[in-house]
Image (tube, rainbow, N blue to C red; front, side):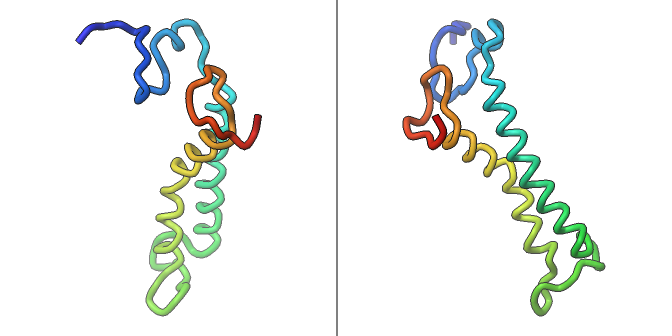
Length: 103
């Protein structure tokens, strides 16, 4: 395996040349962080207001606590961030999805 950093591998979103030349897509990185932390913190606030994750958590249904419902949603924050960024923001390099909603 050679150490050729100029090859374009579709599975590697950032090439070494992009990092060395300072051409990272900071707008997309910022959008990802904003969406990811926004979703996760919003779910965390709801979880806090409903009693946390311990035995103090309120029951949503018979025997099922709010924490049981909210914890999986909390873990999907990064996935929602990736989907949001890849679908909503265009890539400056021209690589990526062809149907963005924000141009």
